[in-house]
Image (cartoon, rainbow, N blue to C red; front, top):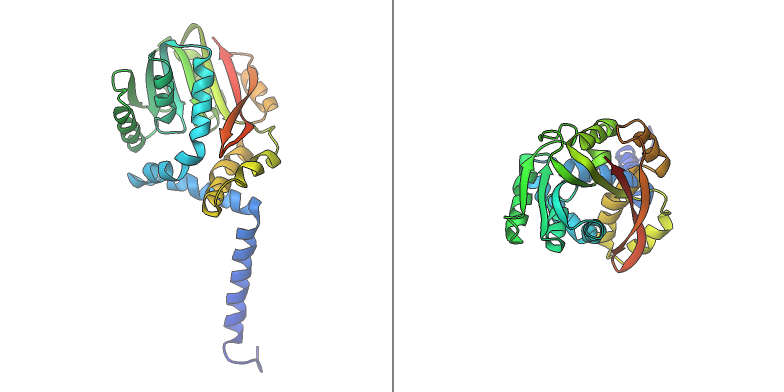
Length: 261
């Protein structure tokens, strides 16, 4: 760059980097994808990760946890139930509060999440009703026919290969038992989610894009769920949209996939 002012090249490079970063951050789709990857990595940080994720997500996700719990207890209020997936004990606590005759085992994938879930259970005064164990959805640490019911939020998509998870759910269910698997409803248009985002403060909107929209974009659609069911011991699945209230806005946020043993 002969003939140009001293430092011009360095300034040009710095300006290009700023423009690139601004382009990424100002594009909602890119921000959602990158932010989602960051949020997932935050959750894996030992000790701090699950707690930081809980602080960031609880306010945004509490409407989803409540929607799952209310939908389950509308169908069953007693028996032995295995719960696993996202929330680090939140779904188990919401279930136990609504159905005191359910005996719940909350399964968490890491010791840090086990500790966080146990603290939540004790703080809610539900230690006699809910026990927390360490285990993976792809290798559930219980014998065949251990549970009347299984409930999972995001467990099918984030618990390992879907066909392996479904085989494990089938194995631990008693004859006649049901598994309810919930996830973000892929068929719900982004415009509906945008209505929720408009109700949030700017900082919370960034987290919403990174945590909620990023997961919605990765969720399975109904056709994919049907294919996974056909290749599993269950053979078929019943699908139902489930509404939830987020930031005061009700949308068809979840899909419930029901698998009958």
